[in-house]
Structure formats: C-alpha cells, structure tokens
Image (cartoon, rainbow, N blue to C red; front, side, top):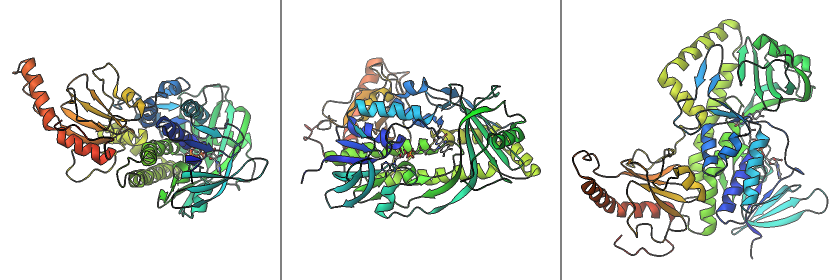
Length: 513
Ligand SMILES: Cc1cc2nc3c(=O)[nH]c(=O)nc-3n(C[C@H](O)[C@H](O)[C@H](O)COP(=O)(O)OP(=O)(O)OC[C@H]3O[C@@H](n4cnc5c(N)ncnc54)[C@H](O)[C@@H]3O)c2cc1C
C-alpha cells in the first residue's frame, strides 16, 4: 500500500517546524499536524542561543531572525556576576532576545517555502504502528476523524505529547518549582540591562523585553505559592519585582498573566520503531538558562537529515539510531545544568544568597570557568561521541570557515548535504556516486585538516591534511604538489568515511581516485 506521506509530524512548535523544513529541503513528503487553529501569538522562550543561531545560519534564516531581536553579549546572573558571551568563537557571540513567535514565524515561512504542508486544526488523537507504516488518526475541528498513512511519525507535540502517551513511552521525573508567575506588562522605566535577573532571599525575578514595548516578567516567591488555578494579580508580580530589583520599573497594563510549574523529565528512548520523539515531547526542564527551545531545535537539526536519508534508502545501518545515542545525553545534560542553575538561583536565606553571589562572581572572573560556562549556555560546547581512535575533531561542532569560492562553510551547508572541506581541490573521483549527498569545497586559507562535515554542522570524520609545515622553505609549486600528493594519499580514508556516513554510493567510483 502506498503511504500518503513519508513523514507525519505532530506539532507546529519550533521543533516540528525546523524538522519539516529540513525534510522538505531533502525532498521528503511531509505534513505537520497542528492542533491549534492558527499560528500561536504567545511566547514562552525568548532566548535564542549561539548554537541555535548557527543552525539557522546553516539554513539561511539566522540573519532574518537576528533582525527581530536584541543581541545580548553579557548575561548578568546574580549579584555582580556577569557571564560574557562576547568571546564565543561564533558569528553570533551573544544570546538573541526575541519572542518565540518570531522564531516560529521564520521557521514556518521557511518550511512552507520549501514545500512542507502545515495543517492547522488537525489534532493527532491516536495511531497504530505497522511494519511498513504508521496509521495516524487526525481530528479536524469539525467533522469526523481521518486516518493518514505515513512511513514515519515524529511526536513534536510538546510537553503533554499525545504521541508519547500512545506509544507508551514513560516520562519519568518530577515538578521542581511551583507557582511561578508569568506576566506580560508595560514598564514606565527601562531596566538597566536587557535581561534583568536576580534572586534575593527566596524570591526570583527575570525581566526580558519583547522589543515592541512589552516586557515578560517571570517572578517566584518561595514563601507565597498559591495553587496554580489561582489568578495572578499585578500587585503580586510587582511586589516580588520590588523585593528582587528594588523597583517594579513602573509596571502597568498587564495583557496576560499566568502561573505555571516547572518539571524535569526525560523519556528513556527517543525512538520506538517508526515513531520518534523530539523537543519538549522528549525532555522538559526548568526555563533557567533558556535551553528548552534551543535543545528542541537542535534535536530536530540532528534528526532531519538522518530521517531523510532513511526515507531515501541510503542511510547506513544504524544511522537513525544515532539520533537517540547523540541527543539523549545532550538532553540529560541540559536537565542537570538547568536544574542546578535553578537550585542555585532559588537559594533561600540572605547569608546563603550572599555566599552564592560571591561564588558566582568569582567563577565568572576565572577565564577557564567562565569560558566553559559560556560554551555550555550557548550550546557551542555540544559535541557527540566519536569512535575509539578517531581524530580528536570527530564529533565536535564545525567552526565556520571562509571557503575558496568566497562563501562561508555555513553557507555551503544550506543545501542540506555533507560538505567535504580540504585545503586543496579533492581529486576527481573521490566523491563519485555521492553527488546527491556530498559537496567538496576548498578552504580559503590552509587549515591543515581534511574534514567531512555532516548536514547538522558536526564533524563526521577528520584527518590531518599532511605535510604543510615546510611552507617556509618550499616553493609554492612544491608546496602545492606536496598537498596534492597528501590529498591523494587520503582518498581511501575519505571513501571509507563516506561509506560510513553516506551509505552505498549511487554508482561505483571510477577507481583509482
Ligand atoms: C516560561 C517559560 C520560559 C521559557 N523560556 C525559554 C527560553 O528562553 N529559551 C528556550 O530555549 N526555551 C524556553 N522555554 C521552553 C520552550 O518554550 C520549549 O522548550 C519549546 O517551546 C519546545 O518546542 P516544541 O516544538 O518541542 O514544543 P511546543 O512549543 O510545546 O510545541 C508543540 C506543538 O504541538 C501542538 N500539539 C500538542 N498536542 C498536539 C496533538 N495531539 N496534535 C497536534 N498538535 C499538537 C501544540 O499546539 C504546539 O503547537 C521556556 C518555557 C517556559 C514555560
């Protein structure tokens, strides 16, 4: 039986939208099923981290999103502690403050442009898995439930995922903080920092701008925690803001207020047969550190090309399972990190708060500790496990480099293919049969390395390019000849790496390469 689509995605949040764009770019027939009747105008996340911006850059939409927000190169944490992001080795050495609906708009426009179908008013109510397909039940707002047959189903349907529930995947964890108040307000005075955050004596308050005159306030009081069904009053939010920041900045005209609790949970497996889970459907944690949407988008970036390779039939054995193997540990790390930050932030009595502020201030002044913290918060430090004896670069994030054809690496990644980067042109024949999956480029300046960059901008394979350190003594001609010989010597290794990541070539190579 022919399936209606290759991939059905439940949920048009940031995860589902990025994934839909990547699948459509790869020529995969996909549909996003979204319960809401229309695009959401609400926002939860407002921090887009550097690694997420790099992923968007590799899709050609980062600059568009950056134009909607405010880049913040320094994060004021508690007391005088300041975490600088300005030295991140990235095109985006900051956190971008922009409402989640802007991120969703940019991702939705891209996905639609690339041919993904987004069906609003389509709630996934159940499904049955078969050996060759998943039959998904979809309920429109009016009318009978319909069945859609897809080769794969991705649950990107958020924290209360129906897909996760129907597939029977446990979601172990616990609520970590209750009765957190959210309020979207106007302020009479502009706060001194773009992101204004502090915690004092059992109270916490963060204020972030939407950029259009509205501000999001997140406030919490250890000693006043009514049930979440209790309406929030502006006075309550003002009071906590005054306790933490010494002023409520003339808070007025709330347009939306709510109370929520924060949970820490993660599924044990990101895949169950033909069903995959991504984003909040797979992991939730405290909003401290602004990691949720970022981790979710990066799940989708990891999954998209692997799922596309599987649909197209060229994925090497086990490739799709590397999605769980790579992203589950990242999710667990984020759970731990954001949980630790939350607990540090919400320490109670004044003496403990003062000690915390002092320690944080000292830590952010130690270059190594500050650098490690910036790498962790920004996602720049994320890397994936590498095979034993692999080159040390294997599994690491690919840094952006200028290319000989005057593009940047992240521009070359925009076709969704692997990019083979070398100092000299790759000999004809080495990538034979992989033209639909791999593009070979030359670096603008010598790097001394050969790298195979995966479509999600991580290094799949690397080698030292060969003798180039005698450049001082050798003539340019001698150096070029030596580089070409070294490159030819790597041909078999490159071929092996291509087979490992890109499967069997579409046609055999005309050996010798
Ligand atoms: C107060 C707060 C502040 C936050 N701040 C940040 C931050 O600064 N930075 C950050 O990175 N993260 C932050 N987060 C977390 C972030 O909002 C989420 O991690 C992110 O939205 C997850 O994206 P998602 O696409 O996986 O899920 P969601 O955004 O939840 O999207 C899921 C979609 O699925 C749809 N859906 C649900 N069930 C069904 C169904 N059965 N059928 C069809 N559709 C369905 C929903 O309508 C929704 O549109 C914050 C969260 C909160 C609560």
